[in-house]
Length: 560
Image 1 (tube, rainbow, N blue to C red):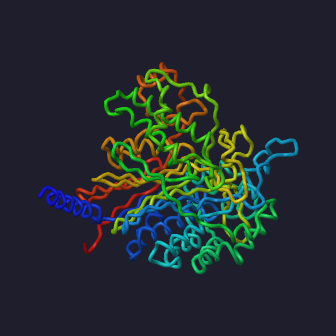
Image 2: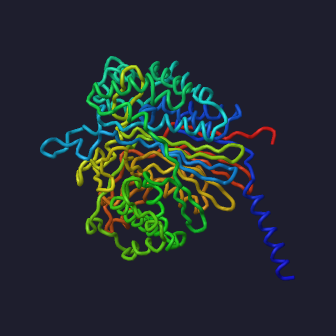
Image 3: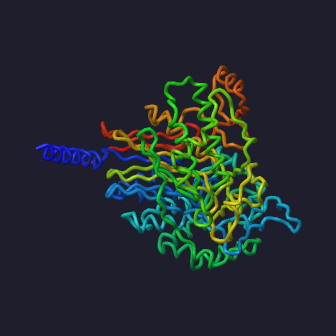
């Protein structure tokens, strides 16, 4: 009788779990960094496409209207959740080093770093992954062909988009690099000058490249006429690409990093993104303490100390795991986090310089979007060309602005990259290797909610996502995640960076008294795009970071 009752109870629990697990949202939502991208994605959902089709459309439009952040000449990570089968996958469209690349390629005969060689121009570009990723998403996960999902991007490339203040600021910052190439200068500047507000930026060659991608998929970009022009343009300008580099590019599907933090399931990016492992380290340290009962100063101090230790492990151990033996299983163990926290003093800052290690970062001008569709499929995607406007180089006749992601490698041990940070052996340059990243598209799940989030911000991406996760754990909603003041510590330099208004005077004094060095950022940073699905109320809210110009849209699903 007891066994029979237990069997019935188990069946009821199983049915309850299945019912809760298969519930579908009554709404669909997209949050992205640009109105046109969000509109394009919503349009695809309303044409019968799923979240993955919408991701193709959003990615492609952002490639057109945010050339300073992402593009066909760049790459990214797409974190997917397939509602049917409850499967979660990371699509890795990160750039790779060309076959002719080698660890000393940016050094002169004396072994010194050649100024800006890994930042400006054709030699700075890795082999792009974004076009291949769009073809992969469409073929393996979407319902609609590329000829449909790329329509908005093609139209915007042909008809143009308007220059805003953000475009002006970044074009002015990278004006010298854009001036170096005839094609880039003609597209993104006007008579060699930063365009006036409201100037229409048309990209006819990019529209043709998008049409070939739409018609021929992978081969439309990585083979044929586009590939020929890309290679010719790169090599004529001192680069080392070959046709084989492009034809042999492969998208990789990876198992995401899964973290249990106080009962919340967090799914996030795996290597070559350092995001998942760094988040796991930090959260496993923080789980040993009760953050909710701490005063603000003590809580911030503890979070900073967790960041410090997690970023140190990034520097010492992380790189492309296809090339370097990264101890990922050890790094995600809770027992390892306890070891890292053994000398954590709640009353005193640890001095980073007392522990040897290195670090590195990638560009601040990345982009992120989040999507959920009517079936509960979802996407968190972070895309980049690294530095603003990437390498500043466009091969003639392609319209493709190339990345400068090669600077994300360690170009020489102990030598800082463009962001003043240095890297280690795990991230040294090798042919076909993917450079280490901080991009961290993330899902959060409990019995009652699903969260989708991510942001641009270079090495600060991980700390921003960490603060968002902690805010969600504290019970706050999507608007709070994107707007809360931010702070960051990445082990080296040994400084807390913080936004204006992040800390009260009392907290600043308290942190200084604990031995922390603090530096206020002149500008607020990040551009987080998030979605929150309350499964109990079956209600979706979405939010776009008030620091940016993006937009989040939630639509009621008809006929449900």
